[in-house]
Length: 185
Ligand SMILES: Cc1cc2nc3c(=O)[nH]c(=O)nc-3n(C[C@H](O)[C@H](O)[C@H](O)COP(=O)(O)O)c2cc1C
Image (cartoon, rainbow, N blue to C red; front, side, top):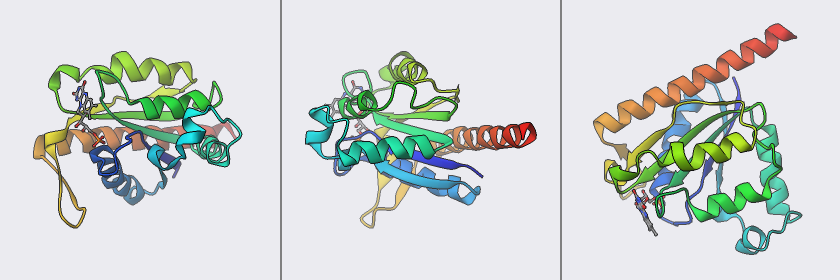
């Protein structure tokens, strides 16, 4: 069992990315992990955009990263890259906030043309923050995520299977990490 921080980097109140992450959080919880959700949009804008490193919301977010063994980073693709609000938060964290952590990068987007944005845009930033192990990520088309009136999320069949696989690989990587650390004493 690991502690997983599940970070949605969308500024949108009706975010598909956030809903997808909360949907996937349930799979991780069912596999025995403790999942802590964090929506970047709930962090006050003056803290994020005023580079207020000492703001309690930034300090609190940094503590959540510090506590986590695994981190899911979800972002909408905006202008062929990750969102600006996600970058604003990452900029305010310690340089090596992801050191030793297992990271699952996820993106949602409107165009298959930007399917590689995780690899060319997000992954280098996560590496620069010291991520120990970045598992295979996944880009989900927004049209494949349906949200019902009650907030229930349904993911189109092919996309759902692919997401389950990447989440299960992330979960297995966390379990191996826990076992390795236990063996090392
Ligand atoms: C300002 C803006 C820019 C966008 N740029 C892109 C883009 O470059 N490539 C892409 O695939 N989708 C793009 N999209 C579509 C979003 O990535 C997509 O709808 C995503 O699922 C939105 O996630 P959210 O609801 O969590 O914000 C853009 C959407 C907006 C609002």
